[in-house]
Length: 114
Ligand code: 5GP
Ligand code: ZN
Image 1: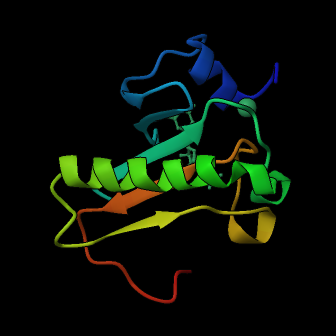
Image 2: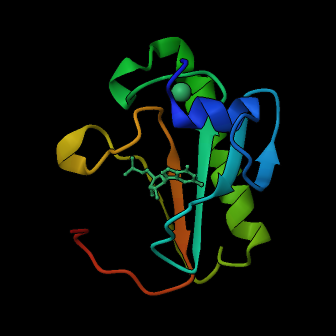
């Protein structure tokens, strides 16, 4: 999608340090980190929200989660703990409408989330 900031990161039009990339997903550091570890894992294809995913996207969603787990391990937070968060629409705080999985960790976190 032309005006999507995350599509521009996928295509390289916006330069960002890429943490991980393969044929289906890209991961990069959040520009406004909310924890010592705050990495975003996104599909390369433009999907605006979780609501737009279809049954056939199950593998893609699972892949995002597994890459989140892998990066948590690389960042050595897998034992202490981390969160994988996918905000959907306004009340959940979604601000970029290209789905993205937040990997958050490196500090204690409260529950329920605000
Ligand atoms: P949301 O609020 O939609 O769940 O999360 C969007 C996230 O994307 C926010 O944490 C925000 O800091 C991050 N973000 C927005 N624009 C950019 C950008 O241009 N580069 C990077 N690296 N992160 C961004
Ligand atoms: Zn996009």
